Amino acid sequence: MTKQRVVVGLSGGVDSAVTAHLLKQQGHEVVGIFMKNWEDDDDSEYCSSNIDFVDAASVADVLGIEIEHVNFAADYKDRVFAEFLREYQAGRTPNPDVLCNAEIKFKAFLDHAMRLGADRIATGHYARVRFNPATGRHELLKGLDASKDQSYFLHRLNQAQLSKALFPVGELHKSEVRRIATEIGLPVAAKKDSTGICFIGERPFREFLNRYIQKTPGPIKDERGRVLGEHHGLSFYTLGQRQGLGIGGVKEKGAQRGNPAGAAPPRGAGEHAPWYVARKDMEKNTLWVVQGHDHPWLLSNALSAQDASWVAGAPPAAGSYGTKTRYRQADAPGTLGADGAQTFRLDFPQPQWAVTPGQSAVLYDGEVCLGGGVIASAA
Image (tube, rainbow, N blue to C red; front, side):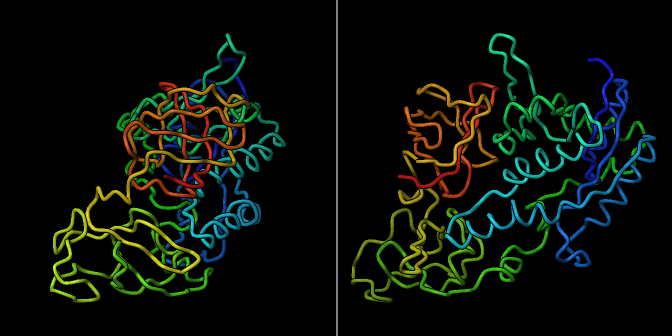
C-alpha cells in the first residue's frame, strides 16, 4: 500500500495503540484521535475517559504522533443512547456497541477524519477488510484470533465505510498484540481490556438504567403461573438472565403457592435448580421464569429480524449460512428465507438458546461477515 494519511482512533487501550504503531511502521503518516462519547458523569468512579485520554496521550508521545481530543458526546446521545433507551423501554435488549460503530466510529469519526485530510481511518478492532476483485466489493472478514473476533459488532458497515477502514490487529492474535506493545515499551502493554457497554463501563447496569427508565415493579411467575417474587421493571431483565432475580428454589409441598397437590415439578427442575428469565409480557408487566438451562421456553427454532443491513449493499441469496444471535457464540447453521432487503427470517436445524429481541442476528459465509439485522421475535 502506498503511503497514506491514516487517522487512528486511540482509545487508551493496547489494541488501538498497537494499531497506530503498525501503521507507522508501514510508513504511513499517522494521526491519533481520542473520541469522547460520554460526559454525563465524567467524575464518577466508573467513567474512565479521563484516565483513558491520559493513556492515549502517553501512547502518542511514545510513538511520536499527534493526538487530538474530539468530543462526540452530543452525536452519541442523539444517535446511540436515545435508541438504546427506546429499545429498553420497549422491553428489548439492544446492543449499543453495534450502533456505536455504525453511527459514531465509522460515521461521525470518519467524517471528522476526512475533514482532517485522511485517506483512511483505523481502529483496534479484531476484524479484517478484503477487496474482492471478482465482485468489485469490499468484504468484512472475521479477525484471525477467533476468541477476539469483533466482526459481529461491525456487521452494519457499508461499502463506503469499509473502503476507508483499516484493522491492522485483525491479522494478529491478542497475545501477539501484547507482545508487540511490551517490546516497544508502550505504557498500556499490560492494561486490562475494557468490558461492558462502551459508555457505562464497569458500573452496575441496573443502577445506571435507574436514572433514565422508570421502575414499574410486577410479578415474577413460573410456567404454571405461580408468583415467585417481584421484578423491578421489565426493562432491567434480559432473556436467559440467571443472576439478580431474587428468587430461590421452590419446594414442592402440596398446594404451596397455588401448586395443586401432587402436580409434577417444572421441567428440568430440582428444588434448587437455577431460574432463568424466559419471557417478558409487557402488556401484563409480568416476568416469566423457568428452571433448567435447556427448558423449551428458552429454545427457538426460528427468528424474524428487521432493520437489516448488508455489507455488500444487497441481501445474500436464500440458503444456508453460519449465524450468530449473540456475540460470544460459535457460528450456528441457519437457513435464510427469501425475504426482502429490510427484514428476514432464519430457521435453525438445532434450536438456539435465549434468542433475544433487540440483539443482532449476524450471517457469515465462512470467514466473511455478510451483515445482519435486529432480532424482532423468536419462535
